[in-house]
Length: 158
Ligand code: SF4
Image (tube, rainbow, N blue to C red; front, side, top):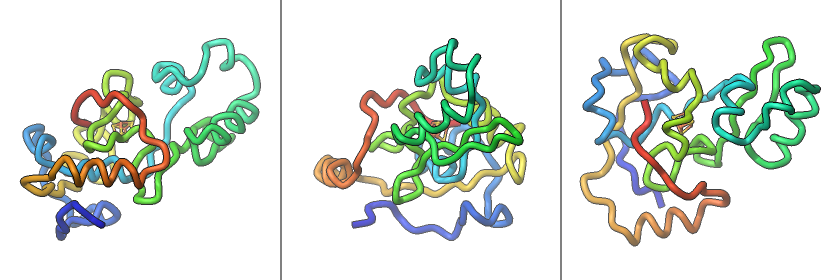
């Protein structure tokens, strides 16, 4: 069951994006958190899933652990960047069932800069309005279908 409203905006086509305003976030279904997110090892330390000591060793070995634990999808040795894992609906592994970032205060730098300083179309975002009323039953059903929700969502993304 898709409980989120359809929209013409396509996160994969920046030409369809709308001018960003911070006030949009509270009514958005967090479409920006369905896009691929590459993060640094420093981001992962801040989030709390990597210890500082681990950054001194092999990043490839670290990537294998993070992949096994479901935090990342892949690692690019050439750039030293990790691609965060996504669930089947393309949601970032850190997106909560209420469409809020569960690590908002510690979120990666790329998320902090998007879309005002970073992104394929700076100043614009893939805003999609969520349904006016999403029942608690719908949210519970959505949570039951997800395999790895992170508990304790904090705030809106961006
Ligand atoms: S803001 Fe949070 S949920 Fe959204 S992409 Fe970044 S880390 Fe993931």
